Image 1 (tube, rainbow, N blue to C red):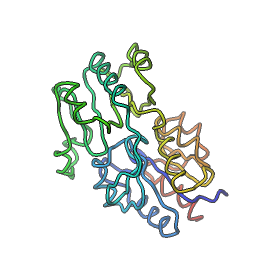
Image 2: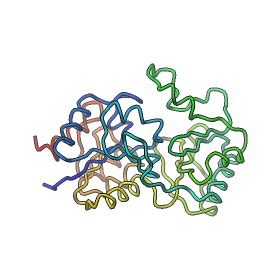
Image 3: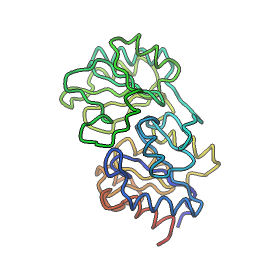
Amino acid sequence: MADIKIVMTDLDGTFMHSIFNPFPENVEAMHKSQAKGVPVVAVTARNYNCASKLFRAAGFQGHVIINNGSAIHDAQTGETLWENAIPDPWLYEALRLSMEHCGVMEAYTSNEAVIYKKLPGYNPFYQREDEADVDPSLQRTRRFVESIDEMMNILSGHGQLVRVRFPNNEGPGSYYESLCRAGEFLITTSNPGIMEIMAAGSGKRGGCQQLARMLNIAPENVMTIGDQYNDVGMIIWAGIGVAVGSAKERVKELADYVSLPFDQGGVAHAIEKFVLNV
């Protein structure tokens, strides 16, 4: 069995019960792993501010990887340890094309969500009314703007991720081709009708690789856990790539091991099997 020295896990649909609540068995297994000297790292499409309450409450220690692998932060203090921002000229073009083709987009730094055009019925995922424990501090880091120039004034030098939403879950069509001509990006998706745009070298695989290099840990000593298409890169790269049982079928096909579904403690089961050996 591989000698796992670090675990890197997706949050939503993998570690979490809901947007702000992890499964208790996953938290317990994480603490046992950390006590054994094997850190557990969150790898999420959220920015740091949106997940910081969770990081503290669940007890994540050491590092977290945010914005789909675009930055690495200290889990508890929020200090930025590494960042791969989209170069400003390419970021501007990505925003311009997004406005031209769909008109609804969000862009993220480590701590701010910048949202173009507040449309009727539009509700950022971390502001859903059915979440009773939404962190009020998020209100201070969410900005609605009316122009690309406003967005660039906020994002300049630190724009890590652009999330574009297409009407009726439609695909990107000609937008994708135009985007490829505008700059060098990493493009992925985590849900139908959504495109996530980052700097080349990001993505969850890129973020995991960077952290492994920082910690001098070989890929064969890494276990990654996920459920969605944007988790595939890190699952393929790691020594042991795990898909929870509720993952997309293609993700499960590419994984080394399929664990229990996320709502049955799939992360805990994988940690117990490959780290705690129980």
